[in-house]
Image (cartoon, rainbow, N blue to C red; front, top):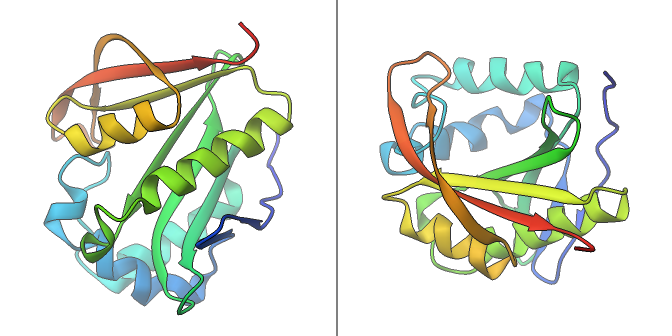
Length: 175
């Protein structure tokens, strides 16, 4: 196991950078929104302190890159994204979430494509994405990123309070 150094990576409209504890209030803006948290594996954040504790936990993550998504035009932190090596050591999986007022603007696709490009540049060959069956927008992001639907599965919230039927998508680089 290793702890990755999270680099700053950029797209045309976004800067993906490591989170800091100073991001707590901005993170709380979207993690406290039930619309954003609806299909996530975390429960809606009830306070800025919950967001702060999550941010503090990021430094100890092993085998995962986690970024804050910053909009270039105004420097606003609008979301979070990550890509991690799965326990099998072969597949990488990714996720993202954005403020509700930033949905349907292509930001999720732009950030996800850049994460995938980054991890492939680091030698990854197999990438997997998963979203709730009802989360049609995330399914479209997976498709726009070049992942192919491979089947159904399920995932649960970290605390086990809810389980979602999911669609699984894969990208196998070089195959």
